Length: 591
Image (tube, rainbow, N blue to C red; front, side, top):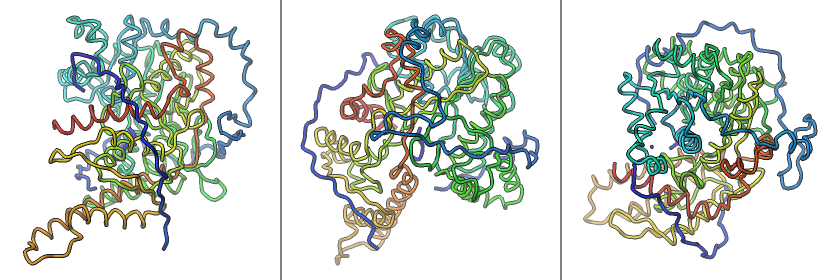
């Protein structure tokens, strides 16, 4: 529910709906303010990631002032340039230098890859695209968390080879599909949070001898995660993976997937700039520099000193407090930013590319529209609205929500990989895969498109009756929204009716408890989402647009990354929401 960021085979490709929605759009109504528990893990379990590290000295943070990350922009925020960036090359310069494109297919063929987080949403889309367009690719080693090698193989067969996302490859290879997939995909039992990725000696030797590109797609995306777990997955693990990468003799690129929201609370146009160790998202004159090693030591000390029963909740609280102290909204953003810092500080001569997607949602076109795995960021809101459970929300309707379909993110990754993997220059390059400066969509648009879709194709309740939805109501404070949602739940449940002579006190008590839990759950969701529902920054994507210009016409057609081509109303009506119904609601119902 709180994360940004699983399919079944079918005989035919899903067809894009021909339904066109043209219902009128009444004015939006707005309101202004007038007046989960974790199972406790053993000490060994949650301390292990930190015990592999030596204690860090506290005086090793570089004396680097945080960049302001601001840009000169024109009125529509589309042509953004960093004040200190040199003038871009002319069209003629780029046409000469890149007349043959980036060389994507040539780069992919016969290259060997190591992918972490391989069973995740975005990694699957990336793997599918590579196998579909470059069947002569070498091996793709997939780091899989499993109890043994056979269990890792079983996960690959069940969660990747058997996934509906790969239906085009199934249709292409027919009876040879499984053998083709197993000739390319190599499951490797391991864990990114262990030293040397927890890889056995034989696999270690093979990977370090053969791998050309490492793609780190593993992450913990929970907004309100415990600080130790978020640090282990998002900060320490990428550093360990980079250390592992330095053993790879043929390595031409280390590609790390991050998020645009590492930029934190800063307003304005946020640039594609690598983090330096010690940066925070606040004015350095009023706050000491962020020391990543101190944060790791802090958590280790807390785990050692706190009573075991207090550890889970205290680590959630300290994570949120530390994030907000340094200018991030939550522990996810902060630990991902610190992971980037660790990579930049320790990369040495390893070529590094960081791709920062914004809110990744279902596929736009490839391999078919609307494929999605699990609830992404917008989906709990869209589905709850369609089910009649969320008639209002804590949101500024004019907030720009930066959305990008997963297949376009995969194309950005592949194009950047080819460009920088070919040159293998020991630099660090950052790409924003984001829409807010080139094709922005506002939250009111998201809810309007959802309203129009569910009005034309309503969901049904447990009795099979169609659910009628109303216009979304918008609230500007958590207090006004909380009062509204409590009242709405009470009315819909019948709780607001007066107790009659035949009422059952026990039944009413149970109903009251249930309504209270529902209201608390929705209010908690609103608090988690609040920073993004009033977000005032936009993400510059100059590097990504320059990459697009450097691609040949054929590459641009085969690996489209131009977000200006997306009609958002068509995407939500004919791809994304039908995809949610097919892959999220249907799966939840079958479960």
